[in-house]
Image 1: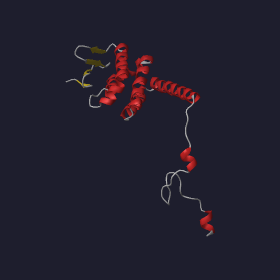
Image 2: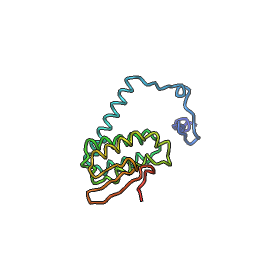
Image 3: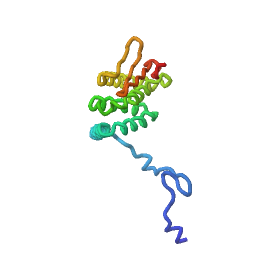
Image 4: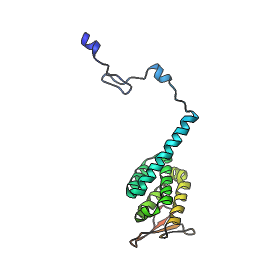
Length: 172
């Protein structure tokens, strides 16, 4: 009928009323190529994003840590490593803003060192080691004891937490 001919199709690549459909042959044959220009643009965007993230962290450190917590909760290790690198960068550039949140900051860094997640730990160990060294250098109330593999963290209110670096957890 004429009404059926004029009705738009409900089929699309994600499926419609008539069920899922496959992409057309030209869509299947389409390829994505990455040129050096694309890579350069991606790197520029990535640098701009990191800069913006650090700017947010300088003004709203708790919001920054909340976001890093979300990223570290993802299972993509490259993003977890990038989050740890972002934390390191912010500690270097603006340590004062994070001072009130040292327990949370250290907890986020230690999350990727959990021995129960060896693939994450292996991938992120160099990033987290640099982050922890940066934290120890930036804050007088943080100290690492190499021989026993313990990290002591104090906060401005006088509380102290000791972490066992072998287990990446609070020492008791």
